[in-house]
Image (cartoon, rainbow, N blue to C red; front, side, top):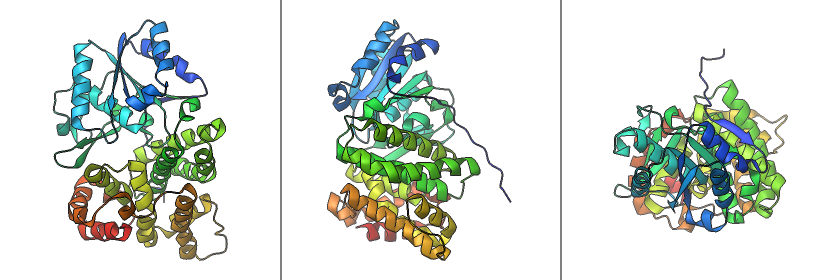
Length: 384
């Protein structure tokens, strides 16, 4: 029998090559007159901000560029951005970049319309007032931050990632222009793609999955398996970029409603303690968590294996399920990504602290197999 569920996707999605030229009109339609454009230095130097600024200026919107976003953005980056937003009299936000820039813009928006500090809004549905209008322009296909209502910000003093989750910080619109993905370095394309795959697999196997999230998650898994290797082989392949951008959005809308599991519970502390790229952390952890989870949802993992191209017809369900983590290992090899945490500078002495952070986050609550602190420790050890 189907269980009750709710499903929300508050962000309007606009997809197509060249749609970034609509940025100015979107801001004007939202009532914005002066924008804080949040990005990082690399995206700005690559020229990806120029078309957005041009669109805003042609629409008569003032623009202030804030390009201090970094990987795993810290609270200080958000606070400095908010200070500039207030100093310049901004009334709207545009984020151009990956998940770090979009999450930073969301967090700045939270502070713009709600009392500081940001940390008091950690968790679900604690943001009282909606953020100012935010237009998200992604330049990577990984986090899906452009269509989700969460923001993950690092507290460097605690080596801990704060996750603020509220529909009140969802972007008003996401402009998905695949042309903006074509300058991604292949390794970055690979890492962000593994984040997309992890979102989809965890959403599909989550205990909070529902029929709508299932459809999106399975399609994201199929698209990632087919198109990610081609995108990594040549990021200038616009067709591959477009498919990965859509796979990212499908996976993100799915997990925003179905939640995640042990992989993300473990990946966030890896970013907080070692500044490890989130997609790379997910990629390394994913197959081992899948192996642990198999007995909790064998039919679901058999579906994942099929979606990744494995021949499962006629196999016993558990044998079919075992092909899912094997497919992920094979994909990591094709993408030439590391498969062990020790290969990327992670040291075992931090495992107890990371395991505590993982459990504290609560992300493991919808994992298909019950998980506690000792389980997370063993999983980290298995990933070393």
